[in-house]
Length: 116
Image (cartoon, rainbow, N blue to C red; front, side):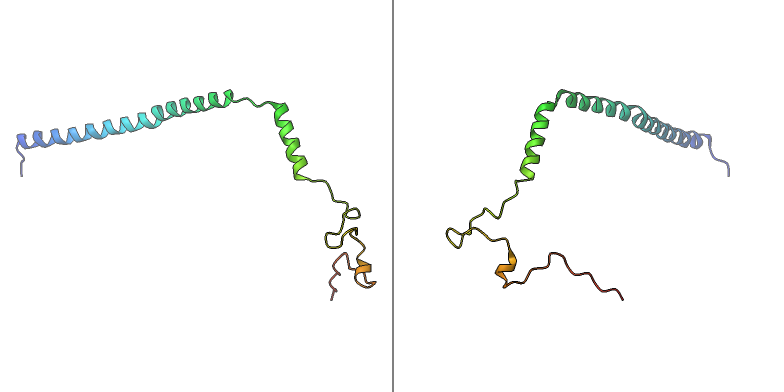
């Protein structure tokens, strides 16, 4: 079967046009990935760096804030021997637990488990 020359020319133009569109799309994609994106990312990073550089930190103020946080995080210890009992007027709290429990003392540590 022999194809007429007009038929071959007609469809070869369509095939060449589609191939050219595919090549053009590939070139555009390559330029987007390798030229446009790196440039925009670089300008974005430069803009962020310039914004960060404008914000300065005063070291003395920072040290003062850190010292304030440190002092507020660790309040002074309470001296229980000088603290008044809120339930009995005029009496100072007794920290000796043996007198409150009839002469027995509370254990300060948990007993060790027995080894087999």
